[in-house]
Image (tube, rainbow, N blue to C red; front, side, top):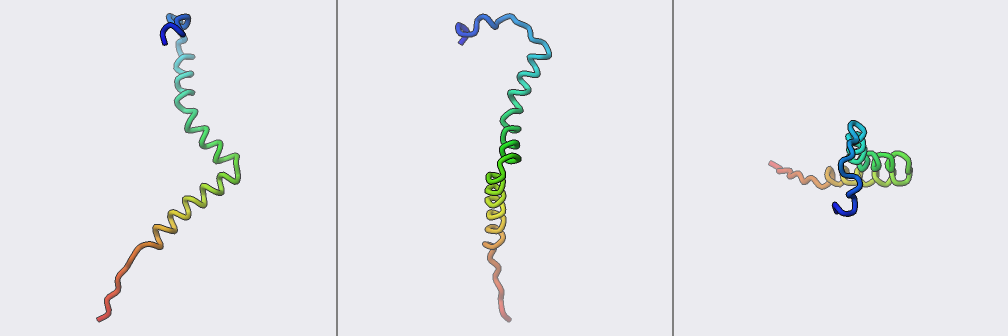
Length: 68
């Protein structure tokens, strides 16, 4: 790897270098947010998926009744 990028060694980017690392780290999370926000059909499908799981959990609870 060092042979491929040897021309980048020794270059000081300062604060700009920190911003590049920050953007690289934040992008995956923001990308998912924008997909959910801008694609209406995908947003609807995700809502249905999570709502179905919540309804399924609530409806599968078993209660026992004893008659005296």
